[in-house]
Length: 105
Image (cartoon, rainbow, N blue to C red):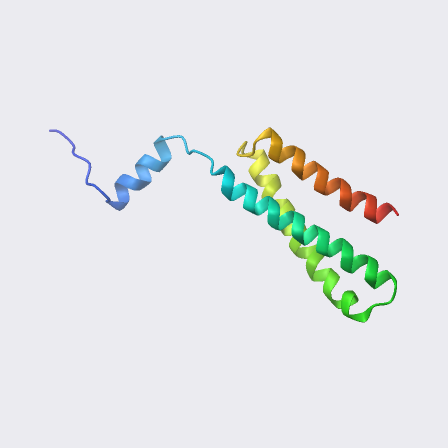
């Protein structure tokens, strides 16, 4: 008895997705990196202003920090899965170094 695959059937898509290697969508990860970099820049900016007593920045920077950390965790998971390119990994390191230098100064 031959098995024929039904086109666009849910079972077929699930099976194909499990059996075929997934091609990483590097542009999607680049967008995620852009977001991470932008939130990190804004976090650093608000952090510095809050140290000077700016009340608006004092209320904004915890959100920016939390969002930046959430994106960092997502990128770390992608890295653990091997979905990021070497260039993307270097970019993550560069962004993290900016945060490190800010907190040390």
